[in-house]
Image 1 (cartoon, rainbow, N blue to C red):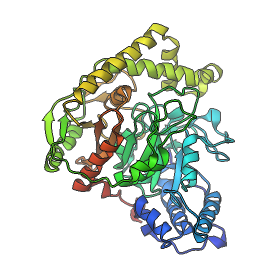
Image 2: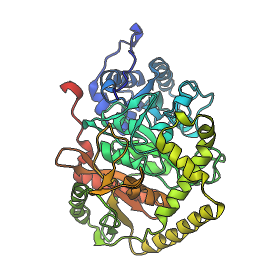
Image 3: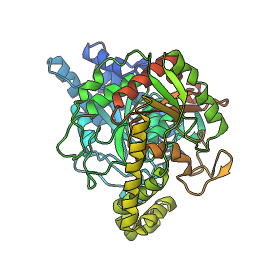
Image 4: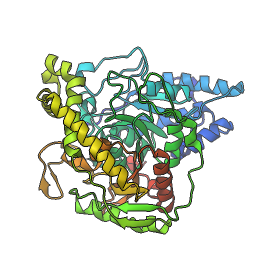
Length: 489
């Protein structure tokens, strides 16, 4: 599928302000500081990113709905607040584009589906609301697969999103537009969501950072207030930037029954710490199948954690039962969320979505109950495992970024797959048990394709996971390797 061209922007003469490509390559934390200290205006920062979006986005198709005039008006308002000396939020002036599953008031939200091609919500989602209140400037929406289903970002509304590191490969998904926009330096921060790996898979494929937070860490509202399999979360190009973003997203909210009480600003503390005496389990991939090169790239980083001072041992938690539990609960969720669309417009749903809904329609009450029992049993096994270890590590994705024209890999590690979910096990087993998990860049394949490793922490230890990811990132520097500029520009 051909990438969708972004519509022209920056035609208003009053937008003629000095631009600096350098602004697009600075970290979110640095941009926030420059803005607060008045070394750069919000208009300058937003305009620089809009100009880069106009130049780069047609090649990768990461941002699918763009609202430049609205963004620049918000930038002027943000600059006026600073000029008056008024207090501002932690994300003040930072450009952001929201995943096209997040409802945005007055901005088209399609869910990647032709059914909702022209939907314009009247209200913001809770996540979008928090970003706006923290001062972020919305420039548009990022691409996602149809209804966020499947970890390959393509849909019949906007087409496919391409990997900036290799344009013939996928960026993964379902937060693929977010990861591609970050990798290509179109945005400093971007939001995602994660049920089966939708934050972590594209972070791995895009050489960026993605956190699947503990359920309730980033509150959301919806029909399934008690549902913990799917979560919203932050993505960025560094752990420091991700923690800054999380500080605005996290915190209690009485509209979510599972919202955690910890204040969000706790994530703005310094990330550094000593790793002496910390115990890390090197799982070898938890017994799953992987492409050989994925394992090789990740295994080389064992020495990095040892050099940090941690004790690294071969060990893996018992994740048995979680495969069955995840697939049952995912199917149950798909029937609940998309059953009406399935009955009304089945021909407008892609085959994998129809399959997942049909799986849900065949479920019985006892099967759903069994899934919850299996999850609970696994939770306690993993809890006991963490009495011996502080973290465990496995590859984020079981395969390398694959051909952008195929919907999903049909084999993993040389063995055929039975369903479109099989290559996502390394992420969705962690989703099912509910522990926080961070994907952080771990290096590159022989072809130069990004590979991520996944740091899993104790129940609700999101902070510890970020600290270890930050230490690894500082020791390796993989995340500081940008993709080539399209066309050599």
